[in-house]
Image (tube, rainbow, N blue to C red):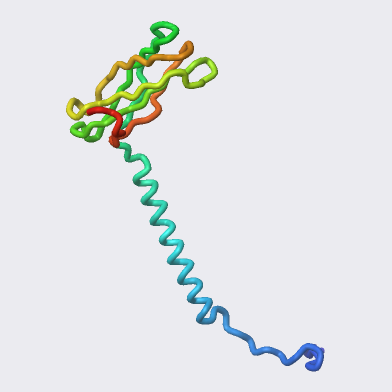
Length: 146
């Protein structure tokens, strides 16, 4: 027994639409635009990842010592990719609550070896128990004299 396809009443549902092919011209344009946006996004992310860690100056704390209740001594190791460019680093002293109680900007003049150890005395407003390097840059602020 062969089953016949059920036909819907045309007066109630309207005429049957012809079958459309998948992806007309507008669908192809949308697909091309989406692929182009995806490629652009991949390029932007790749460039960001390639340049995000290109710091020309890096510093790490190698030693710290509390001299007295109002002074902290830090030794920092500064590494510069271009030693012929002046740079600076910001170092901080912290108390038990990890609050910053002292800060010092250290100017590193042009010249010298790529990696050098610098001794820094930080005046503090409270008893310091640790220190850290906040960051470094080659863009020296105008208020710092070279």
